Length: 262
Image (cartoon, rainbow, N blue to C red; front, top):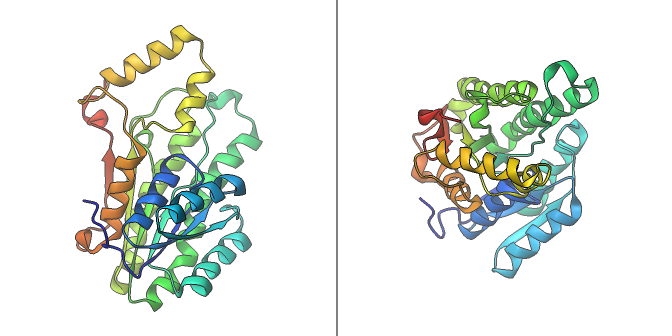
Protein backbone atom coordinates (compact mmCIF):
# COMPACT_ATOMS: atom_id res chain seq x y z
CA UNK A 1 0.00 0.00 0.00
CA UNK A 2 2.89 2.40 0.64
CA UNK A 3 4.37 3.90 -2.50
CA UNK A 4 7.24 6.36 -2.76
CA UNK A 5 5.97 9.61 -4.20
CA UNK A 6 2.29 8.82 -3.63
CA UNK A 7 2.00 12.03 -1.60
CA UNK A 8 4.32 14.34 -3.52
CA UNK A 9 3.30 18.01 -3.11
CA UNK A 10 0.90 17.12 -0.29
CA UNK A 11 0.90 18.61 3.20
CA UNK A 12 0.10 16.50 6.26
CA UNK A 13 -0.39 17.05 9.96
CA UNK A 14 0.12 14.18 12.40
CA UNK A 15 -0.77 14.73 16.05
CA UNK A 16 0.84 12.77 18.85
CA UNK A 17 3.76 12.18 16.51
CA UNK A 18 6.58 12.28 19.02
CA UNK A 19 6.60 8.51 19.41
CA UNK A 20 4.71 5.32 18.68
CA UNK A 21 2.02 5.19 16.02
CA UNK A 22 2.15 8.93 15.39
CA UNK A 23 5.89 8.94 14.78
CA UNK A 24 5.58 5.93 12.50
CA UNK A 25 2.81 7.67 10.57
CA UNK A 26 4.77 10.91 10.21
CA UNK A 27 7.85 9.07 8.94
CA UNK A 28 5.74 7.05 6.49
CA UNK A 29 3.89 10.09 5.16
CA UNK A 30 7.14 11.98 4.68
CA UNK A 31 8.65 8.95 2.98
CA UNK A 32 5.77 9.02 0.51
CA UNK A 33 6.56 12.64 -0.35
CA UNK A 34 4.41 14.74 2.00
CA UNK A 35 5.64 17.74 3.95
CA UNK A 36 4.67 16.92 7.53
CA UNK A 37 3.83 19.01 10.57
CA UNK A 38 4.87 16.79 13.48
CA UNK A 39 2.73 17.66 16.48
CA UNK A 40 3.36 16.51 20.01
CA UNK A 41 2.92 18.22 23.35
CA UNK A 42 6.37 16.77 24.12
CA UNK A 43 8.35 19.17 21.94
CA UNK A 44 11.61 17.28 22.38
CA UNK A 45 10.00 14.10 21.08
CA UNK A 46 8.44 15.98 18.17
CA UNK A 47 11.87 17.32 17.29
CA UNK A 48 13.33 13.83 17.31
CA UNK A 49 10.72 12.67 14.80
CA UNK A 50 11.48 15.69 12.63
CA UNK A 51 15.18 14.82 12.79
CA UNK A 52 14.42 11.25 11.61
CA UNK A 53 12.43 12.60 8.68
CA UNK A 54 14.91 15.24 7.58
CA UNK A 55 17.85 12.84 7.96
CA UNK A 56 16.12 10.62 5.41
CA UNK A 57 15.66 13.54 3.02
CA UNK A 58 12.08 14.40 3.96
CA UNK A 59 10.45 17.70 4.86
CA UNK A 60 9.01 18.28 8.32
CA UNK A 61 8.60 20.78 11.11
CA UNK A 62 7.72 20.37 14.78
CA UNK A 63 4.68 21.76 16.58
CA UNK A 64 4.15 21.58 20.34
CA UNK A 65 0.48 22.48 20.52
CA UNK A 66 -2.08 20.88 22.82
CA UNK A 67 -4.81 19.30 20.68
CA UNK A 68 -7.40 19.88 23.41
CA UNK A 69 -7.01 23.66 23.10
CA UNK A 70 -8.71 25.49 20.25
CA UNK A 71 -6.06 28.20 19.99
CA UNK A 72 -3.26 25.63 19.73
CA UNK A 73 -5.10 23.63 17.07
CA UNK A 74 -5.81 26.73 14.99
CA UNK A 75 -2.18 27.81 15.26
CA UNK A 76 -0.92 24.36 14.24
CA UNK A 77 -3.08 24.28 11.14
CA UNK A 78 -2.16 27.85 10.23
CA UNK A 79 1.52 26.91 10.48
CA UNK A 80 0.96 24.15 7.94
CA UNK A 81 -0.79 26.55 5.58
CA UNK A 82 1.76 29.34 6.02
CA UNK A 83 4.83 27.10 5.81
CA UNK A 84 3.79 24.58 3.16
CA UNK A 85 0.92 26.21 1.29
CA UNK A 86 -2.11 24.30 2.51
CA UNK A 87 -3.35 21.11 4.12
CA UNK A 88 -4.22 17.82 2.43
CA UNK A 89 -3.92 15.15 5.12
CA UNK A 90 -4.80 15.10 8.81
CA UNK A 91 -3.88 12.12 10.97
CA UNK A 92 -5.57 12.93 14.28
CA UNK A 93 -3.69 10.45 16.41
CA UNK A 94 -2.84 12.06 19.76
CA UNK A 95 -4.17 10.03 22.65
CA UNK A 96 -3.70 9.09 26.29
CA UNK A 97 -4.68 6.06 28.35
CA UNK A 98 -5.63 5.58 31.99
CA UNK A 99 -6.31 2.03 33.22
CA UNK A 100 -8.69 2.77 36.08
CA UNK A 101 -12.10 1.26 36.86
CA UNK A 102 -14.84 3.82 36.32
CA UNK A 103 -15.88 3.78 39.99
CA UNK A 104 -12.37 4.82 41.03
CA UNK A 105 -11.56 7.24 38.21
CA UNK A 106 -11.01 10.86 39.14
CA UNK A 107 -12.81 13.61 37.29
CA UNK A 108 -9.40 15.00 36.32
CA UNK A 109 -8.43 11.77 34.57
CA UNK A 110 -11.85 11.50 32.95
CA UNK A 111 -11.56 15.03 31.59
CA UNK A 112 -8.04 14.35 30.30
CA UNK A 113 -9.12 11.23 28.40
CA UNK A 114 -12.13 12.91 26.83
CA UNK A 115 -10.29 16.16 26.09
CA UNK A 116 -7.39 14.51 24.28
CA UNK A 117 -8.85 11.32 22.83
CA UNK A 118 -12.17 12.72 21.60
CA UNK A 119 -12.30 16.51 21.77
CA UNK A 120 -8.77 16.76 20.38
CA UNK A 121 -9.75 14.75 17.31
CA UNK A 122 -12.88 16.83 16.79
CA UNK A 123 -11.04 20.15 17.08
CA UNK A 124 -8.35 19.07 14.62
CA UNK A 125 -11.00 17.92 12.17
CA UNK A 126 -13.13 21.04 12.63
CA UNK A 127 -10.36 23.44 11.73
CA UNK A 128 -8.92 21.29 8.94
CA UNK A 129 -12.08 21.45 6.84
CA UNK A 130 -11.60 24.94 5.40
CA UNK A 131 -7.96 24.54 4.30
CA UNK A 132 -8.72 21.12 2.80
CA UNK A 133 -11.70 22.55 0.94
CA UNK A 134 -9.42 25.29 -0.41
CA UNK A 135 -7.10 22.60 -1.82
CA UNK A 136 -9.97 20.79 -3.54
CA UNK A 137 -10.24 18.01 -0.99
CA UNK A 138 -8.26 15.97 1.46
CA UNK A 139 -8.10 12.97 3.74
CA UNK A 140 -8.72 12.82 7.48
CA UNK A 141 -7.63 9.75 9.40
CA UNK A 142 -8.65 9.34 13.05
CA UNK A 143 -6.88 6.88 15.34
CA UNK A 144 -9.44 4.88 17.28
CA UNK A 145 -8.77 1.49 18.89
CA UNK A 146 -10.07 -2.06 18.90
CA UNK A 147 -11.30 -1.14 22.37
CA UNK A 148 -14.02 0.92 20.72
CA UNK A 149 -15.81 -2.38 20.14
CA UNK A 150 -13.91 -4.93 22.26
CA UNK A 151 -12.97 -3.27 25.52
CA UNK A 152 -11.15 -4.43 28.63
CA UNK A 153 -11.84 -3.75 32.32
CA UNK A 154 -10.46 -0.40 33.43
CA UNK A 155 -10.96 1.20 30.02
CA UNK A 156 -14.54 2.48 30.16
CA UNK A 157 -13.77 6.13 29.42
CA UNK A 158 -10.99 5.34 26.94
CA UNK A 159 -13.27 2.94 25.07
CA UNK A 160 -16.10 5.49 25.05
CA UNK A 161 -13.80 8.15 23.60
CA UNK A 162 -12.46 5.81 20.93
CA UNK A 163 -15.98 4.70 19.98
CA UNK A 164 -16.84 8.37 19.65
CA UNK A 165 -13.95 8.80 17.23
CA UNK A 166 -15.37 6.07 14.97
CA UNK A 167 -18.82 7.67 15.09
CA UNK A 168 -17.31 11.07 14.31
CA UNK A 169 -15.52 9.75 11.23
CA UNK A 170 -18.72 8.15 9.97
CA UNK A 171 -20.84 11.26 10.58
CA UNK A 172 -18.37 13.92 9.43
CA UNK A 173 -18.15 12.32 6.00
CA UNK A 174 -21.79 13.29 5.44
CA UNK A 175 -20.88 16.94 5.97
CA UNK A 176 -17.66 17.17 3.96
CA UNK A 177 -17.87 14.46 1.31
CA UNK A 178 -19.12 16.86 -1.37
CA UNK A 179 -15.97 18.89 -0.78
CA UNK A 180 -13.96 15.79 -1.76
CA UNK A 181 -12.81 15.34 1.83
CA UNK A 182 -12.65 11.73 2.95
CA UNK A 183 -12.81 10.75 6.61
CA UNK A 184 -11.84 7.34 7.96
CA UNK A 185 -10.88 5.79 11.28
CA UNK A 186 -8.25 3.17 12.01
CA UNK A 187 -8.44 0.84 15.00
CA UNK A 188 -5.05 -0.61 15.93
CA UNK A 189 -4.79 -3.71 18.05
CA UNK A 190 -1.70 -4.28 20.19
CA UNK A 191 1.16 -2.37 18.55
CA UNK A 192 4.80 -2.32 19.66
CA UNK A 193 4.99 1.24 21.00
CA UNK A 194 6.46 3.05 24.01
CA UNK A 195 2.93 3.07 25.47
CA UNK A 196 2.89 -0.74 25.42
CA UNK A 197 6.35 -0.80 26.98
CA UNK A 198 5.18 1.47 29.81
CA UNK A 199 2.15 -0.72 30.41
CA UNK A 200 4.35 -3.81 30.68
CA UNK A 201 6.78 -2.04 33.01
CA UNK A 202 3.91 -1.42 35.42
CA UNK A 203 3.44 -5.19 35.74
CA UNK A 204 5.63 -7.77 37.44
CA UNK A 205 7.40 -10.30 35.22
CA UNK A 206 4.72 -12.96 35.58
CA UNK A 207 1.91 -10.50 34.83
CA UNK A 208 3.75 -9.11 31.80
CA UNK A 209 4.46 -12.58 30.41
CA UNK A 210 0.84 -13.60 30.94
CA UNK A 211 -0.40 -10.44 29.26
CA UNK A 212 1.77 -10.95 26.18
CA UNK A 213 0.78 -14.63 25.97
CA UNK A 214 -2.85 -13.52 25.90
CA UNK A 215 -2.11 -10.89 23.26
CA UNK A 216 -0.41 -13.45 21.03
CA UNK A 217 -3.28 -15.91 21.49
CA UNK A 218 -5.90 -13.27 20.79
CA UNK A 219 -5.06 -12.64 17.14
CA UNK A 220 -4.56 -14.82 14.11
CA UNK A 221 -0.88 -13.97 13.55
CA UNK A 222 0.31 -14.58 17.11
CA UNK A 223 2.34 -11.38 17.39
CA UNK A 224 2.05 -7.66 18.04
CA UNK A 225 1.94 -5.17 15.20
CA UNK A 226 4.52 -2.54 14.28
CA UNK A 227 4.22 1.20 13.80
CA UNK A 228 5.51 0.72 10.27
CA UNK A 229 2.51 -1.46 9.48
CA UNK A 230 0.15 1.19 10.82
CA UNK A 231 2.07 3.87 8.92
CA UNK A 232 1.58 1.97 5.67
CA UNK A 233 -2.18 1.96 6.26
CA UNK A 234 -2.16 5.70 6.96
CA UNK A 235 -0.30 6.39 3.71
CA UNK A 236 -2.81 4.27 1.81
CA UNK A 237 -5.75 6.19 3.31
CA UNK A 238 -4.01 9.52 2.68
CA UNK A 239 -3.28 8.76 -0.97
CA UNK A 240 -5.32 8.52 -4.16
CA UNK A 241 -5.04 4.74 -3.88
CA UNK A 242 -7.99 4.97 -1.46
CA UNK A 243 -9.88 7.71 -3.32
CA UNK A 244 -13.22 5.87 -3.10
CA UNK A 245 -12.88 4.87 0.56
CA UNK A 246 -14.61 7.04 3.15
CA UNK A 247 -16.65 6.73 6.35
CA UNK A 248 -15.12 3.40 7.37
CA UNK A 249 -13.24 2.09 10.39
CA UNK A 250 -10.38 -0.23 9.48
CA UNK A 251 -9.12 -2.60 12.17
CA UNK A 252 -5.38 -3.21 11.93
CA UNK A 253 -5.28 -5.93 14.55
CA UNK A 254 -4.28 -9.28 12.99
CA UNK A 255 -7.84 -10.46 13.43
CA UNK A 256 -8.22 -9.61 17.14
CA UNK A 257 -11.76 -8.33 16.62
CA UNK A 258 -12.62 -11.60 14.87
CA UNK A 259 -10.96 -13.95 17.38
CA UNK A 260 -12.20 -12.13 20.51
CA UNK A 261 -10.27 -14.49 22.78
CA UNK A 262 -8.48 -11.98 25.01
